[in-house]
Length: 541
Image (cartoon, rainbow, N blue to C red):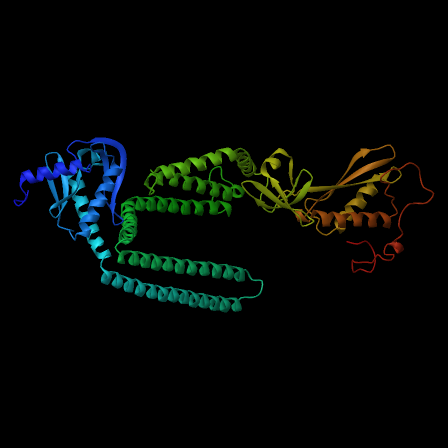
């Protein structure tokens, strides 16, 4: 206690202040928190009710007292004085207010000493700003500084916009030059246009971020020029630097974990590259692995790669920044819920794709029939299989549907044993069966696209009431050309039977006709038909 203020006088002052209801040796908690502000600056927080005066009433009384002190020109020095259990903040010889024990938030780690110290510093700054607010010269100077900052803001924003336009023009020029080097319809044209759009958006984003930074800095600077708005400017500047500091510290703390994640994924990448080399060797039949076949090597490689990446993610998860936060856990639970709700059909399709792959029922390029769909397999995926029909239609078959139907593969043994394709005719009993078989084999021999080995075969598959049912089996050189080859084979069968005067009695035979039902050779190419064989006559090969 300074020697120039006697103890008795200080006690009398405290008693008088207590009578004014803003301080008192005795207080009770009010259950409310009321900030004490002066000149738009928070000085401290009051929580206690003193002599039946609520924190709100105490704040109003203190603000009036501070206004009176400023009006009298008394703004310092601001000091802390103690009297018994009471801690007072004085301005010069006058007590501004007191902090009661019940004003302290012990749960937040406050003590009456540090609360008083912060209040003293804030009050000193607020009083100086109150004086500055009443000084016209300082206000004029602050206005000129704000005007200068505004002019600089306009110039910087204009410069950012100009730089954005220059960068965009250069990107357009570079893209145009690249487009002139590629042909029309080339895939590089599309790629270049996408890259151009991406670069435009990137430049625009950089310009927007730069403009936002300049505008934020200008607003912070202008607010800090004037006493009343200075707390806002200081809080904005503190928030900006606190955010940068928090991000920098977070990144620094995350570096060891990120390094561990990098090592985990690097090991996973090396293992995957080794396995890819092995599976590629099996696919190209340069080496063999147990239970891995050339047609299953590629899907097995994808499955193993996916499992390795999932395992690496599970191992690396604890080291990811923020993996232990409630937000990260909430997102994980949300994604898990979505997957679980929508996975019933998905799992069915995926499991069906495994059955298709590892049963080796079909592969890319095979000519197959699934139900009433016939065509070439162009894609075997996790969810569906795509088939291109002879009519150039693409049919998407869900894997579950494919598994539940009978699949006929015409290409499975086409390169080794050969796959027979049937076609049938019915001939009357008056035609020698040996002649009919010879004619069918002759038609097969004339047909382009029919393999010589294995040789075509003729079977008498049924003896009907009026005719014999003959089935011709031929093996095709290219299974996917099934339609065109059968078309040529049927044409050659008609030509050969007409050439040798044998009637085809399909679909029904009830009585012998008065004349043989055959087409003479001189009528084979009547208009508008024409000879496309290039031989000038005879059967069309």
